[in-house]
Figure 1: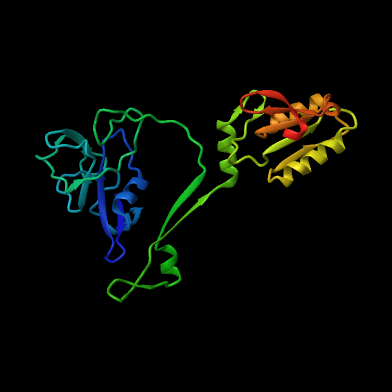
Figure 2: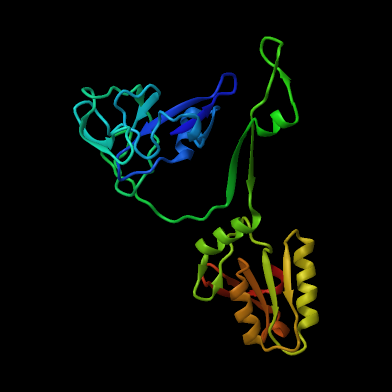
Length: 276
């Protein structure tokens, strides 16, 4: 049983009937009854005529909505409106008549499609990268915020907000774009365009100079000119970081060549310095 609070009317009690193997999903109820507020009824002492835990639809003087599975002619086991008692063979349309239907029950894997009835619902885990909050009138009521309505009279705005979580977005990208060696950044969101790697003794300054040339052409560049680690460590780190392209300043640099690598495809080729 729920307490429903319409924005421009007095609160009222609502009873929702669902099959016994289902629970009522308050988020679905809120979506259906929006912009009214919805909460579980907790003022039982004020309604001694209602037997908590044993409410049945027979002779119920409250608004009563049922799950679409509760159809005329279907038989149910319900509360008997008496402490500790249930009623058997309570038939919809004979022993009770609901005021309507509502999609309020929790959904489960295998549930039929509500639109066509042919498909079934598959439940899978996902990555949450954003939120939508239905704030309703909680804050506008608290701060007495008003705006002019279509008729020129003040009305209370209904609020909502949304947000994208940057760290969540990065986690989603990492989950979908990686291989056994590390990240494989999509070009559109990579933190750098090119990873320049000094892969030979004394080639750090040359790698920095080449990185500066690339940056001057509008490329975002990460330069690895560490002198205290081997070329193998640098290559492993570059694959782990996963920048889309890498330029290796290595053994053929003095001949005027560098190696170009594509992180996603693994393609490699030697490129003349004047074409980098």
